[in-house]
Image (cartoon, rainbow, N blue to C red; front, top):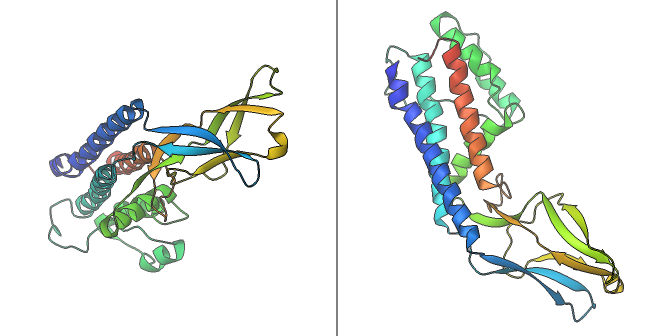
Length: 256
């Protein structure tokens, strides 16, 4: 089935090119030191506050590039499904033939409760085994949801804190510095100019001398399903799940 290599597989490879290019751009962006972390007094409370100072915001174009990668990956699944369901080429003009992803197991069961027989049964059995719904295959569902968001609103890149922030501090000004790993239960995102990152209470200022580094990552700033998810690692995961699905059908002999 050479059509997969010339259509669906091409879309996956194009998505991976987008991801690689975007990763290179983001690396170059951080080399320009686009943000700083500064401390300042809170004149009302006497606390010491660490804030973000943004010199350069992530280009909005990155959201469009990420959206292109996502759409290529999502549409490659529709192509795959048409090929495994109609290997002889039938159904090529039927727009209803697509790799459906659902919002819940109940919605999926309602749509696929009928038993399928004949040559299409192996493909349908694999499809059901993939659990293409939220709560079954959450990464696949997130890919689908991200494609929908990009179609209607666009994806917005933003600064975000990473999972663990390293802070060098001393208890007492003459004490040797120690290193503290600060784990964020929920990443701060989006980080904008002036966002408060850390606060030392007034009664601790004479005991703690802190030199925070607070590394940022570039994440999706979308306020829905993608918020605070790192763009590059998430896109790599999307590519991985799509390639894994294609390989599953290939191993079963349904995709050449």
